[in-house]
Amino acid sequence: MALLMGAAFALPACQTVSSEAAGATESAAPTTAETPPNIVLIFVDDMGYADLGSYGSPVARTPNLDRLALEGQKWTSFYAPASVCTPSRAGLLTGRLAVRSGMAGLVHARHVLFPTSTGGLPQSEVTIAEMLGRKGYRSAALGKWHLGHLPEFLPTSQGFESYFGIPYSNDMNMPGGNETPWTVELFFEPPNIENWDVPLMDDEEIIERPANQPTLTKRYTERAIEFMQDSQKSGNPFFLYLAHNMPHTPLFTSDEFKGVSAGDAYGDVIEEIDWSVGEIVSALEEMDIADKTLVIFTSDNGPWLTMLTHSGSAGRLRDGKGTTWEGGMRVPAIFWWPGKVQPKTITGMGSALDLMPTFSAISGADMPADRTFDGVDLSSALFADADSPRDVIYYYRFTDVFAVRKGRYKAHFSTYGSFGGGGRHDLETPLLYDIEADPGEQFDIAANHPDIVAELKALADAQTASVEQVENQLELYPPGEKRGEDEKRPWTSEDEEPSSD
Image 1: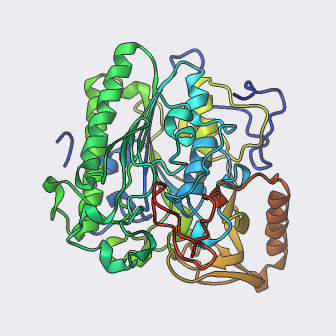
Image 2 (image 1 turned 30 degrees about the horizontal axis):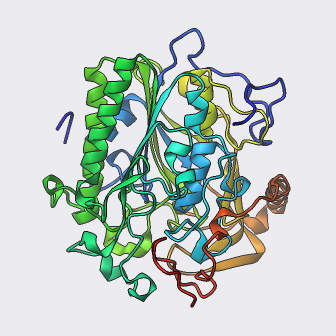
Image 3 (image 1 turned 60 degrees about the vertical axis):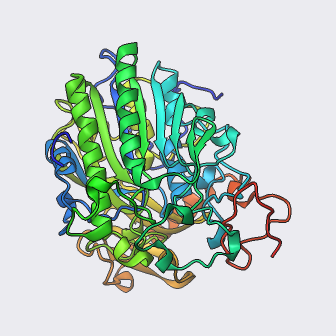
C-alpha cells in the first residue's frame, strides 16, 4: 500500500449558457501555452458529506484524501447535479442538468435506469471524454456507469476508449426478479455476491457474472494505474474517470480491509477507497506527472440513510439521498494539482456541473456551441485568489425544480422524502432558510423575507422555462414492462421475460 493505508464545437463570442454562467467568460486556468494537463476524476457512490476525516468523520480514517484536501482545495458547498445516481452522472459528464437530456425520471420507481431499461444517455449529448478526445486526450471509464447498459449507451459509445466496470448499481438484478423480497436485511452481513447478478464488463463484453464485488475496488485501482502508465508512454494527456460503485450498498471490501475501521462495514469501505486514492496519487508521483495532473474527488449524491449502519453521514446537513435537502445533494469535493491549485478551503458554491467547463478551460478543448450548459468555469477559484463564480444552485428532483439557492438563502417549493421512504409534497407556502447560518435547514424564515422567496421563485420559474422537452430515457422499457405504476422496482435483467404485473 502506497502512502498512508457529433456536435458543433468552438465557442462563439456569445456562448449558449445558463443565466448563472453568463458573465463568467474570463478564465484564470493555466492553459493554451502549456501542455494540457492530465485529469483524474474520482466519483464515488452515496458518500455522505461527513464521511471523510477532513469533513468531520469520527470513525473512518482517510489520510490520503485528507492530504489532498490539505495540499489542494476542500470545497464545503459543492453540489451533485441530482440526489440519485443516473441524473447525477448524466449531469457530471455533460455539464447539463439531466432534464435537458431526458435522463431525469418522472416517478420514484423509474427515477434511475434499471436492468430492464432500453434507454440511456443519447448519443446527441457530448460527454467530457468526447470533448477532450478532440484535443488529443486518451480516456478510460472505470467502475459504475449507470447511463445505459445497451451497446449504444456504454462508455465506448460515449467517447471513452475503454471501459471496465459494472453497467448499473451493484444492488440490481436480484435473482428471481420481482419475486425476490426487497428488504434492508438482505444487504447486511454476511454479504453474498449471488444475491445480485450484476455483470462486470470489459468494454462491451461481460467477463464475469455475478461480479466478484469484494475485489472491485482493488481491480479498478489496478486498471486505473495501468491506464495512466500506458497513456504516459503514448505521450498523450489522459482523462481517467474512476467511478467507484462503493459505498453504495451492498457493501463489499477486499479481505485486507475487513474489520479495519471503527465504522464497521461502511467505514471499511471508506478506508479502502482512501487506499485506492493513495495508490493512484503514488503512481502519479512515481511517474513524475503529479504536477501535470488535476485530481478531483467527489460523490454522486448524499448518503442512503435507509441503510442504517451501512449508510454514510451528512453531518449537520439535513436528510440524505433522494431528497433536495442539503444532505441529499451537498457532497465532499477535493481538488488537487501541485503547484497549480491554490491550497485553501472554498466556502463558495460549486457543482459537478461545473467540471466540464473547467476542464474545457484548462485543456483548451472547445465546448459545443449549439446547446445550453448549466455549469461555470471554476478556474478563478482554483487557480487565482478569487471566489467561486457560481451563485445559484437549482435542486432538481425528477424533472422539476424543488428548491433554489442563491447566495446564502435557499427556498423549497416542493420536498421529497429520503430515498426509500416518504413521497412528494408540493408546498402551499415555500420554506426559506439561511443556509450559511443554518446548514441543517431547521429554522424557516420565509415569513420574514417574502421578497427573497419571490426572487427565488422567479429564478425557479425562469429555469423551468429554459428547458426544452425531450424524450424521457428513463421511461423506455420493453413492450409489456409495466413496473413502476404500482411502485414495484424492475429488478429483472434484459434477458428475462418482462413481468406484466
